[in-house]
Length: 398
Ligand code: MLT
Image 1 (cartoon, rainbow, N blue to C red):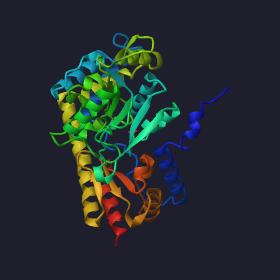
Image 2: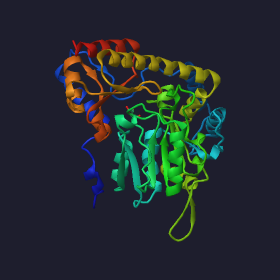
Image 3: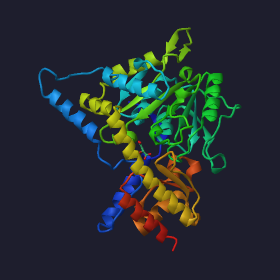
Image 4: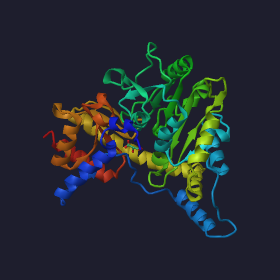
């Protein structure tokens, strides 16, 4: 047996596993210490009433011989795909239902989509960014080229025409920086992708946090994007589904490429083939719950959850202002990204903050080298905990 040696090129553990390991070790040694977790972006509010009602209804259906469901369509039930299609249409984007694939979340899909691309592709990845893109392409042994997100470009790197790329990752609103591309910037990215015959893998997991009406919530608001972009969305942060697991990926039928022997290949068909082979679909109960999010009441509940987290984001941002710490994000995003105080590097600041004030965040270095001197706090917590964490934060400057 020979193992995939590309795994030797990965860090020992996944970023959030490393954070959890350090926090658990510290809590083990200090059982009485109160720790506030603003590290991984995990929701804290319970599922909305509409979602729970739909879930209960689906549970009852599963307990009745007449309505019981076995295997479902791997790409999702029509009722959910149509609800998602209508949701896009309300935002001015027309899709066919069979361009929408229901999944257990954007993390799995952004990783799994790499199955469809040859190892020979050059992958363009912004730094800093969600570590799944780098780790999954490293597992496949692909050549990765980084583009720098820095304070100078507001963490919104733009295409460098002197570099050729085949696969381009964009995360907007960005995890971890909270930066969000505007329409003109995304137009440039789409033009660059079309010129390079490249595909954009557009992670829109945080689109529901966009409050500026002028900012695009979907790459498909940009002309030409259906020829070159795949979009990943998730109900995790939109409606509190981190533990329930449901997301969706849009693979337009217009994305095509020609194989070495001249056969035309269609990405949508390949993804369907991949999913029907390797995935048995999201549970019926969860899909019914997800469909409830797209109803009028479900959307209202989701918006109320987002408003709650946004209030926390403001509390954190205000604290940064007060402490004179330079920060980014927090407006169209649940994340606040700031320069590590006291001239520390990010893992050093992680340990310092954990030991001194019992607050957990995520070290910027975990998102790429440009994050070495940055740190991320999440707004996903209760208001009380956020206020308490920020009081403790201020005490470090006293
Ligand atoms: C994060 O904290 O970056 C996210 O929660 C991770 C994820 O969504 O997988």
